[in-house]
Length: 250
Ligand SMILES: [Zn+2]
Ligand SMILES: [Zn+2]
Image 1 (cartoon, protein in one colour):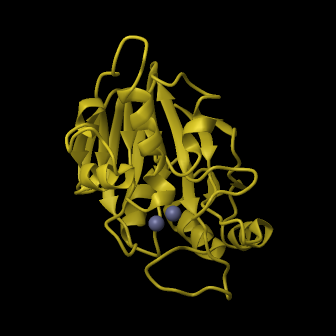
Image 2: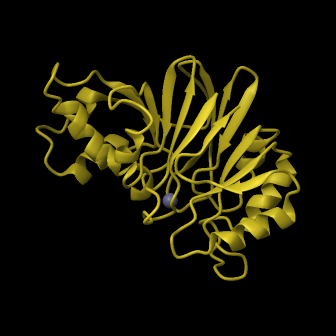
C-alpha cells in the first residue's frame, strides 16, 4: 500500500496545505480518502484527473468533501470523451443531496449520480477494489466515520474527525500507520465530542500499539510543534506531522 498525503490542514486550508485528502494506492487501484478544500488541485500532482477508482468521504463537513463539487465539474463536463463514468463514492447518508445543494446549479437533481455512484456508509466491513475497509462511527457532531484500510496483511487507519471514542480502539489496533487527527492543543481547547489533541492522539496510538503515528488535521491557527511534542510524550513509537506530498509505503 502506498499512502500520499494530498492535504492535511484542519478545518480550513493553510498557505502550505489543502484540507483533508489522502491517496491510497495498491495493485494499480486508487482510493481517495476525503476531498477537502483545495484537494483537487493538489491531487493532480499525484494522479491523473480521471484516474481515481473510488472515493471515501469520512463526513460531510466542508473541509472533508467540498472539492467534490469541483470534481463534479471535471467529470460531468469533460470535453474529450464526454462525462466520465460513475465511480463509487462512499459517504454518510445524504451525501448526494448535500453535494448537489452545495453545487447549487446541477442540470438536474440526479446529475451528480451520473458521475458518482453514491453508496451509504455504515459501520462494518466492505471490499473496495483490492482493499478491505473496516468502517466505524466516530465521535463528532455530525455522522462521521473512521476507517481502517487493509491490504496484503498491512493496515492503515484514518481517524477522520473525532473526539475520544472506543471505536478508535478497534479501528487502530495494531495498525502499521495511524493517521490521526490532532486538531486541538491540550490545555487550550477542551470541547468534548469534537476533536482530539496531541496528547490524546498519542495515548490512542499507545493503547492501539500502532507502528507509526502521523498527526493530521491541525488547523493553521494551532502550533503543530506543541501537538507533536504532546503526542511524543504519550507514544514512544515513530511520530510525525503529516505534510502535503509525504509518501508512506506500507
Ligand atoms: Zn475537519
Ligand atoms: Zn469535521
